[in-house]
Length: 76
Image (tube, rainbow, N blue to C red; front, side, top):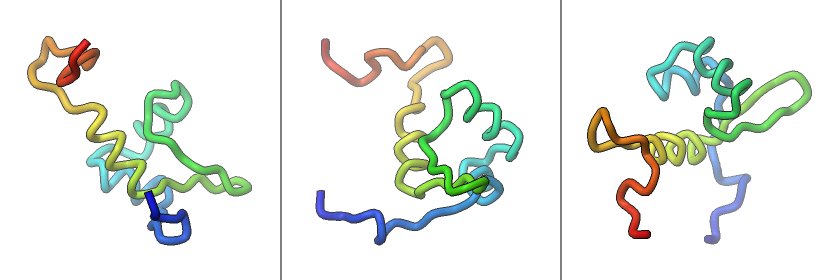
């Protein structure tokens, strides 16, 4: 991987929530539980890299309502 962090785009919570089609409050709750996308803390500001938002979305892809995400699409 040759991409550096200076080439990534960063957004704050409100824009990240809009990007993910979630409410900002839901994204805040996911941060507390550790179930949301990775983020950076800069002082009091929270920012998300767009690449981390996309990775989180991809990691939450499911094939059915009974799919719990464990081993989905992966060979054991």
